[in-house]
Image (cartoon, rainbow over all chains, first blue to last red; front, top):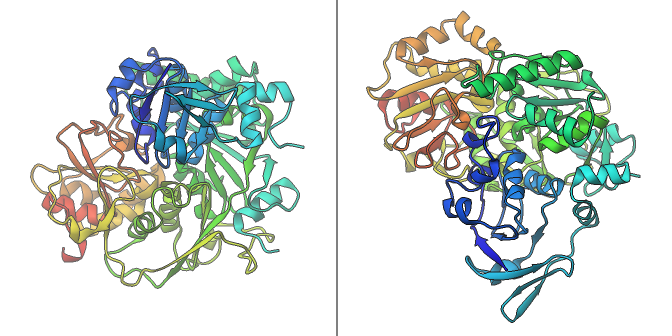
Length: 164
Length: 410
């Protein structure tokens, strides 16, 4: 089972990992331990592999810092489901292989602390008796995620997504 | 069919006509990265991509500005690693003290009209001030550009902003930038290029303020078409124009002739109100600096209000010039002396306290009024600190009183 961590709108990258916790500032620390360290310390302490982040609009706005996504990857976040994502965050998350979906239905249905079953291969999230369909991803996004991120994608295909 | 400026630039570099929604693979003209992320990009290049050499070192630029000069042994060691790498690979490097990447690349004319400039920093939208397509990307994308010379992009839709009128006294480009965040909101231009029209009269430094803040509305780029009074800074290619047939996803018209000073309240950039709504709010720290408002003209505007006066007791006024050139300009004409005699603390040109790492990190009880571009919780230090954003004139007026103050009454 995966625990749902629900957030509001406009979660900025300073909330995900404050700039003071950047690998540049703490080269010997695990940036995964800094995930939501100030905005949601219980996430930093308790989040488990496979847990699901659910949020409202514009998740990940602000800085281009990839270490915000890297911190979530190290925590093995199973998926991020939001109403919408900020552009750079969306790209960084795909690049590092974190599945992310835009689904008003699932965002409305899932509450903080819910225990769900995330089944990405079958595009499903199950909460108790209910099962929700994860939306179809754009082709480029699906292909990058299937490869495990943009670096394995480029290594595998020898080209960028959508490149002729 | 007509093309937006973003479509023109991306078409030019892609070698074919592209429109919003298309995917393109392009060779960026310039790839900028700073000290905060370059060490990590080097690691990705070597460890994940298994490469030792960058493909086109002449297109790369490193700027050491985020922690400048180094504040810890760790940052010092990583900066030395970047210096060594730059030397090995023959990459241009602007060392600590030269200034903020977005300012330096404009001053050095490395960012230029019609060019694609990719930066490891979200405020790379600022290169649109000279009519470049500037955008920020994460470390893995930058490492892939180093390795291949190429990147892929979705051609953005364009949000056209038409500016009418001229600023009234005491109101400037920062007030307009904040007003646009207020109207368009923090994600209203997500994935889009913002194209600013009606600004042929606007000097370069004001364009830099506007373009740097396009990302605060979600913008992928923020482009002021490179025409008009700032022309001495550009050599605009003949293929670039404002195309009357261009298709815009949205258009917003703003008349600035009656614009009031704007202030962004904690903890989101689009929590913007007229200054009068927050006038009198107690402030402990005033910060003048950053890629948005750390230029000579910003210091000059502040000095105009501070000359011959002293800042309020218990207020710290921290001034961080955007570059060594801007600092030299302020030193040459008495602007700097006026600031120092009023009680300002001067720090090394660079990003300064903008992201709370050094040179004025905020404590939990601090209330800061800043000319920067972000006031997210914890951005400048303690998550309990309060950050207000405003223009350099508002910053100076506020430093004089210790409370948010309208510069028009000073």
